[in-house]
Length: 70
Image 1 (cartoon, rainbow, N blue to C red):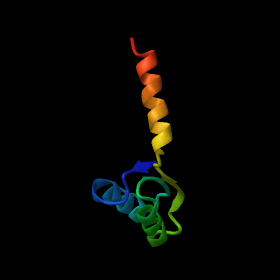
Image 2 (cartoon, rainbow, N blue to C red; image 1 turned 45 degrees about the vertical axis):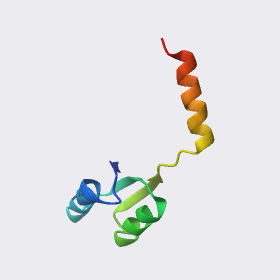
Image 3 (cartoon, rainbow, N blue to C red; image 1 turned 135 degrees about the vertical axis):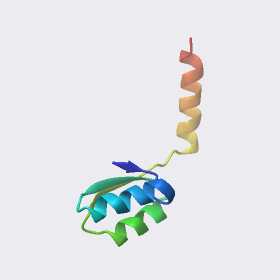
């Protein structure tokens, strides 16, 4: 699993691993850029996972952290 593959180090790592005939799972955001990377390497990328956090879930998580903080 390589994160942040839309650009920079994550993209570089993805390209390097794939150039050595590895298969990888990629993760990051935005989803459109992940799909572009996956389209470049259709035989090497086995799973694309986007990182989406909806505002409602963020508020819930933040509230939960506040109520359980010690």
